[in-house]
Amino acid sequence: MSQSVTLQVPATTANLGPGFDCIGAALTLYNTCQFSRLDAGELEITVSGVDAERVSTDQSNLLYQAFAKFYEQLGQVPPPVRIQIELGVPLARGLGSSATAIVGGLVGANWLAGQPLSTTEVMEIAIAIEGHPDNVVPALLGGCRLAASRGSAWEICEVPWHSEIVPVVAIPNFELSTAEARRVLPAQYSRADAIFNTAHFGLLVRALETGNPQWLQAALQDRIHQPYRQTLISGFDAVREAALQAGAYELVISGAGPTLLALTSPQQSASVCQAMSQAWQQQGISTQAIALAIDADGTKTID
Image (cartoon, rainbow, N blue to C red; front, side, top):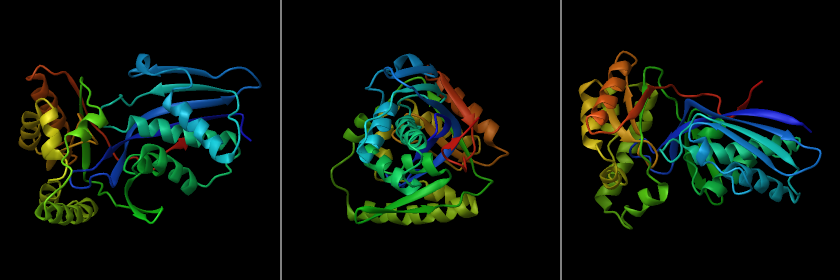
């Protein structure tokens, strides 16, 4: 069994417009966590980086809760452990921060325990903790992933992401909780809206694979969550319009928001970044806009 392991866990963007709660992609923005088994003593957690002061350092820490859940699944007591967390993914912004904690805690526990569980088994525990697969699956496996249930099991499909499609995220300096973003959603949808999203999600999968600009522009439309959630995001219309004017194919809400995700070409990525940032600044909202890439590795060990 390992005495220490350091993991790098990617941020994720989920939904991608019409793919509500079933598709997500890992991004090149990371949290790292180091687990060191202690011979004796109490739990030790230190946190540094983005929003570090807001992360608990006791047993209520989400990463530790996932760590402990792993040992509970084995019927064992968690060992004394020191956990050092370095945050690069901001909290409550729609970039999968909770998924990084859940996946990091489970994978770290699996390493310290001698890897008794397979990646699939770890993934299933992560989905059970999170409640849906769209963030935890790409955080664990990397790439763009579609998850579909089959009874109590999950079928995971990798969705090819064309190298000419650049994800640009604009992260504002305000938060939006997932719970709040879910409260605004209707309990029922019309048949027309269900058909609309089915067609557009099918087109999205092909658009991501081929990089076809016209398909991307159409495919990112949604009637299930975005029309309701965008009302919670101050400046949404202005940022979207600025991104489109700068050459983005389309703009969507990343996860539950408030981070906004534009897909664009490599040639336009810098201008889209600048346009999104300026549009929010004109609304009095400071923001960080970054052109990222798709992380192909998922959670991995680092030296």
